[in-house]
Image 1 (cartoon, one colour):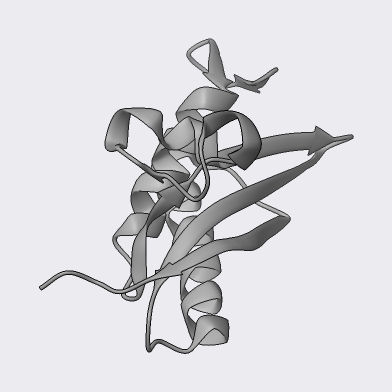
Image 2: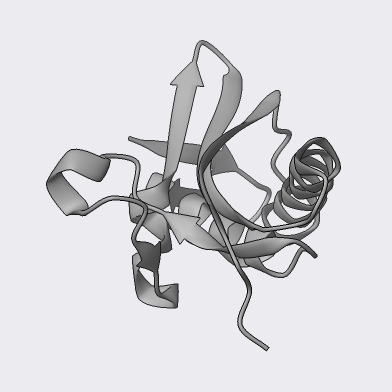
Length: 120
């Protein structure tokens, strides 16, 4: 699936993989995030931390009618307040997708896949 935007200069197509990569990059910059996790833990390994090129495996972009929803699977750092980390990730992802791609996101759902002790 992809998003079609019509502008004065022509048509722009944005794939879901691009959206998920940008959303994953915005999420890992937030305080308290150790990394992204795979959405299918059984197949890919339990709470494996994804590298930059695999962020799309930890983010699902869904389109329902004209609404855009993002589901993110993350691993948080031990000792952080999970609700605050999730709220910060939601705000950062919405802001980044809005400013970078000009998209209006209806919801950002956060799924905590694990808690890890951060390495200094």
